[in-house]
Image (cartoon, rainbow over the protein chains, first blue to last red):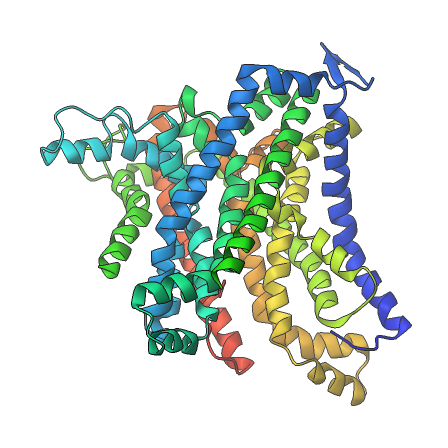
Length: 290
Length: 265
């Protein structure tokens, strides 16, 4: 950053940042404001009633259908996040501490390749794997491990969790890997020299120092999963549907934009709320560990 | 034990991708085991499906436009981040990263409502605008890295030696950040090509490839063709990624940096 910037420099900076700023203002801030406005209006068949009302929110929070979808979205996203981050941590640890520096790039490449293929097709393939006559059931039957196909693996919340845990794997591995790479290795040596065991060194040095990466991974996985549309529609069945499916139905099928807007605002608020808890909570945990 | 776990995890990561070519070459309309025989007819059917060809063309033009627009906007923001200071800079630069932390469905519905209220006809251009918005934070992040690798003294030297500001930027800075620009274009292209929900909401009469595929998933007879297409897409993205990685490594060598690993490290 330039120090002692002149007035001309400040003007130049402002002019240069104007295009991206105006773009985000017009295509993000304005539309989000409009959504918030809509959520306080109501739809009377084909006409939009612009009088202020809280009816949409009242309905969203009292109608068991909406409440359940909201709760389920947050709950599924939280489960996906926990599963993904816990499964990803050892992989990131292995990459950072056990892979020789020269082949780290190759390993990262290996981990990201599956995720540059169409998300839609990947989710569909999980349906093929988990289905009644799917790859998993056929294999288990051939091996003689089960007699009849397992029916609990597709069209419910479990299949949504499995599919999303796969879809977001690299988004959890990469930030944790980056955080682990930044740890000064001499701190770990020092801890061992001072008599800590491998396990206590990990718990008291490595884990707290990688907390920044864990928080990033949690947010990166949690935020998009709350609003995921494809996975619940393809593998969720009736019990795995999430809030995004309902938002889409309200806007495009029922033509009830105000209700859809209210659900969108609630989804946004739950994302913000959980994100705040995660950031504040884990920062405290990391603080205590030190 | 850790190595064993990592290998199991890799199997989990690759499980769906491995199935793709298997079913693409399988001579059956049913996507299930046992396999029935080898065929290439699903691949041959690809160019003979006009709606598919059209959706690929729509997707490609949207992805090219969105990645170029996002990279241009990203260049402005990243340049400001690297070079200029003014009150409120941090807030503005934080604000333009906001699309990154919003679920895409919210971006999609809010844009849809505004466009419909304004009476704008939905078409490929509206999808381009939406995709540019979500690609922009990625472009900024990548270009911030490219500018960060750069010593500002080089550009100052060029100006001291008589270049105008624009000449110094175009002839000195631009070639040095070229690998970052190419990475940003490729990442934006890939994100846009694969994006479904925004395209689903904002597309007009010309569906993008993912929107077309989504409609096809309801017709079981069309699925093997989808598998063949998926196989081609995997091959294409691996080639693109290898290209991007090669360019990035060359850029690293040119600016004399040690290789830190990959795109994200």
